Length: 100
Image 1 (tube, rainbow, N blue to C red):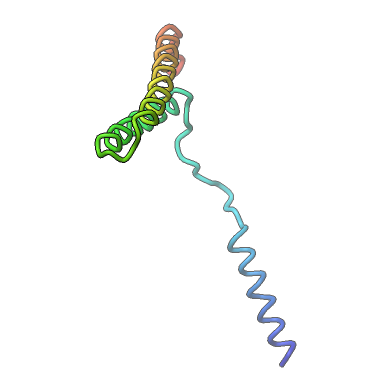
Image 2 (cartoon, rainbow, N blue to C red):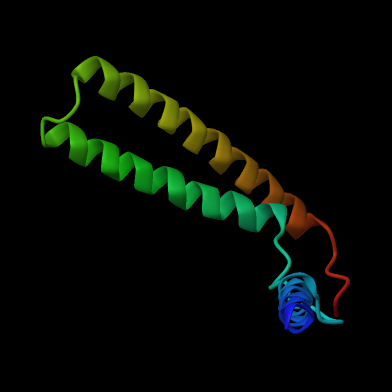
């Protein structure tokens, strides 16, 4: 009876490891992200953070000094993102499209 219980535990353990760690031959990882796509997503996140920050300040949940500091940092980041997005879009328009 001990051997039967040991074999059952061993089979369950092996089966569990196989289920958890086995990777199928081909994985779909989703669409490939470009730098421009990443920057656009980050820009939306920064804008959302600015909206949340303004709401928190309007609701009186944040001191003015913190608000000014955080708002300045987020605006600087947004400006940097917008500049890089514009640079990448201009570069993409200048290079001929090779997919055609």
